[in-house]
Image (cartoon, rainbow over the protein chains, first blue to last red):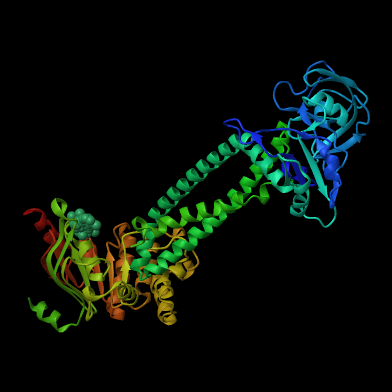
Length: 343
Length: 252
Ligand SMILES: Nc1ncnc2c1ncn2[C@@H]1O[C@H](COP(=O)(O)OP(=O)(O)OP(=O)(O)O)[C@@H](O)[C@H]1O
Ligand SMILES: [Mg+2]
């Protein structure tokens, strides 16, 4: 979901050195000069280059309370007018044109009971009077999870969000037709001053994903993985156990078949065919159940403020593949392993 | 002793010589057979009797190739079972031996007809349809062919088992307490079937039983005690068998 929002960015120009602090995967970078955007924009093959100014900005809702409380990040930045480079889309209203005008993401507006035309305070942390002129969406959702975003004019962003005017966190660049991301980076690199680098949009997206998954989703993902691992283990053992019991019960029938002249192979094949049929049926049932739960979760997460990306559970290999090996191993192993092998 | 000479003239259908069977090892070893030599002549109905734990089932299983002897030899016809690998033993059980157990003889998911032809189906052949047809009439199950075992009485189930045991025209049919779970009337039916199979179609039957009345259907009774052959009796009657059994209990 985070990747798809920045797909239009072909290259990112930023300070080469990150000041890393221990325990943080991605350090804080020095800003780059805003007017570098103009220099970059003149390079052949560049369709658009815009500064990306980022800072903190907490909106105050209609009731006087800060929107989003103290929890999720409250971000502010310049409203990037190039729609390809802006992860947010204008859903209603218009882009900010003069000082004091802002676009906010629709989720934040709803939470703060703010409408287009309302005037409120943005704490950057210095209070700034702002008027809402537009509402934005992020990747088709009302926001990036619970993050609130306020988009201002470049001038306002420079003025309120950075330590010194003329500084941006990075410069987002879009390539012209027929120019690949790598070509773009290769062309940009010679014009950049010392200490400034260009990376492809893809690299940037990967870095962001990494940061997000390591910091934000990391704990959650680990929890889910451990949980599903435990579930798989428990399921495997209980299936194995059940089959062991069934096979033990069938030992008498197998002994009868052997006495009547069934070969070892015939008995084993019979048991395996039955085990396979049961394993397939059970796995299909389990899969259907799992899909049901996944669909339930998919409905639950947006309700908790974590919109799911499009292309979700069914595009993940694990829910498809996991039931099969666990089901088939546990069903096949008992009839095959020596203690239960039909005599 | 006049009978002994009569027996030697008959071809043996099954025979064990100096059969020893030891279960387990060390302190817990059980000597279930302790040097048994016995012949089951072809075309005869032999009953094996003896106290519980005397080794009757063990003798039958070893003679039939369901289990292997610790020492000694077991033969079906001219075939020495000790020299057979698993595949040949399987073939022998399928083609030359029939079984009737005390219970759980039938595969519950198969119909009566399918159970009867199961050994033939396992062999991948059709057997002799006329023979099987005749068998179905003999055991009186024509109207039950498409029922499942659970829909039959215990006596009917044992009759199906008898029909199945004879379906492949085996050299010898072994029956381990085939009437043990039946009331006397159903038991009589099953015993009658086994007797007729021997007398009318020249089959060979070896049957383990505790019941002197059942033993009286046989041509000959052999008595086991503590893993040894202790006596044999020709043309038994229920009374004589009963007396002989009582005699066991006094000395031991
Ligand atoms: N699989 C086995 N493992 C260990 N000992 C066994 C096993 N089968 C039988 N025995 C022992 O061998 C001896 C003879 O058993 P067997 O089943 O042949 O007796 P039986 O004459 O058929 O008795 P019953 O009339 O009760 O059926 C018994 O002491 C029994 O406990
Ligand atoms: Mg027994």
